[in-house]
Image (cartoon, rainbow, N blue to C red; front, side):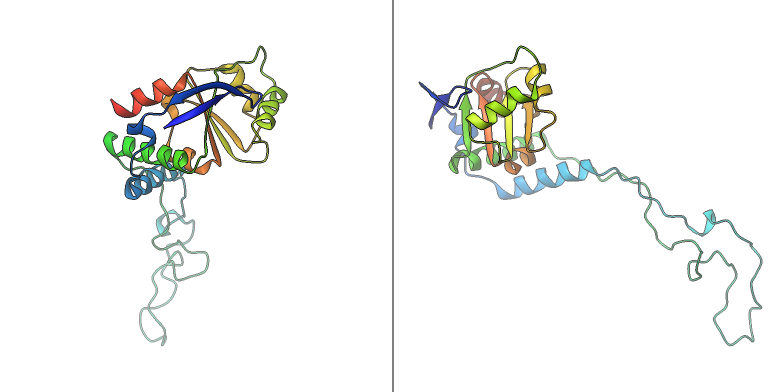
Length: 209
């Protein structure tokens, strides 16, 4: 699959690049995508939820009424979960929601996500670019030139580019990552995936080795 290379003003440079069929042209695996997205979202959860149980409640340990003869259920502690102000029964405890996926499955999921975006023509290849200073205005101008100022976009750079990253950090709908930081959720969550020319080789290397 050949894709035209644009400059940051949105104009065609007259050059085209060949996208690897092994990365951008495979049959998407829906289950691999599901698992990778599920793991990504699970890893975002802090898991710090906590409710007090009866052993952690401050209160008297006195038996609140006699065992028999009241006509009601027996009760031994005011801290029981059946009483107002008592401990919560089977409440949430701190835990980790993360789970393991093997590398080959994660690579398959990411290739599937890129293939979906490429097939839907949501993939844009631009020349490598940089800014002299980190300015949000510069990045906004790039978005406007590529008609992405009102859409969610993911920019994939070949190398760490501090100025471009800092220029995009204030924008909620745009995200800038290195080729090694691509994840399935980020690719599919974007309306357009913008890949710099220099990052294509890194993407191919990371997802086919």
